[in-house]
Length: 416
Image (cartoon, rainbow, N blue to C red; front, side, top):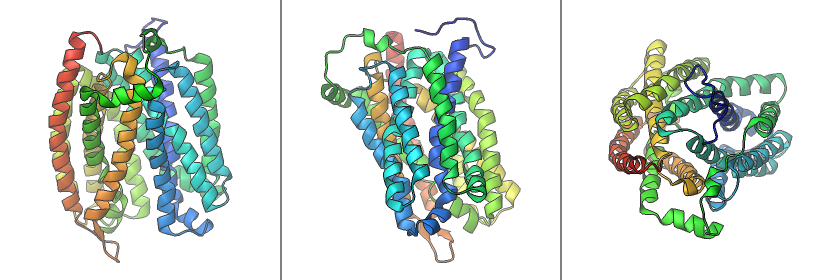
């Protein structure tokens, strides 16, 4: 492993490892923020660009669809190059797509910009995870994932209020240009200070990109990982599309209170993410995944059956729910990094990211088929959606058991 200098940082990582964790977490933050920023801009974009709600939905989904496609297209090439160079290439494309979003003056231009942004942004997470797997041992990856998970929480805290504030002070273009400026600085730091990640290139691999993609897709142990990701993503994303509508119309939370709820939930996630990651390294990823799943199933059952409830109780329950969600995500992601062999990590992570994107879209479709929103805005059958999510989480425990057994065998062979 190329992790020098070897001087330990206060966290137990070397100084260079601490830098890698920080820069990858910040990079993930910019990518997720770019996606999150569209939520508060929805009403403004519909009025400014004179588009219907269905057209705006296409702007949102275009990113996920193009990200899923790009992951598959990039999979065959993902293990053929220095991972640092891949990261820089796709991050540059992501920045270009975000510039296009900021410059867009019509619906068509914005739609194309989101497709471009997704094509490049969709590969960044998988490349980051491949780098993490190459540079960190298995007994460190829970903590690493815990820190990277903070990017999701931070984007949740800043996405909605930042989008609203900048659009009100300047225009809806402003949030995108802020992301561009910040991302450009991150790109330069990666260029100057990240070392090449090339250990996987030392392993002989004569397959061309198409053969490499087909071979990776065809391996039975990898297929179990893809199926587990499908189930994890489907169960994890089903509640999200109607989460805000349920809080506003069923729980009687105002828009300002909703911002407060997301902010507090994000802060709680930031605090608990590293702690959960450290715990997963200590007690075992699969054990924590089981405990987190059981706990989350209970919290989902409680939350999705709520009616009008005091704000403090809602915030408390929502925060507790997200602690469970974070524990499942951190533990499962750390386990999943050990599934592929080093020579296949880039391809596996790219395909896995695509599976996650497509599964998230499927989850949204399933949620829309189950939930009914009345003219008054009231959400019906949210508790049914909760029951489906609970069932999916229960089944995922079984799938992750097979993943855990596979990882144990790889660790015994020192191949993870």
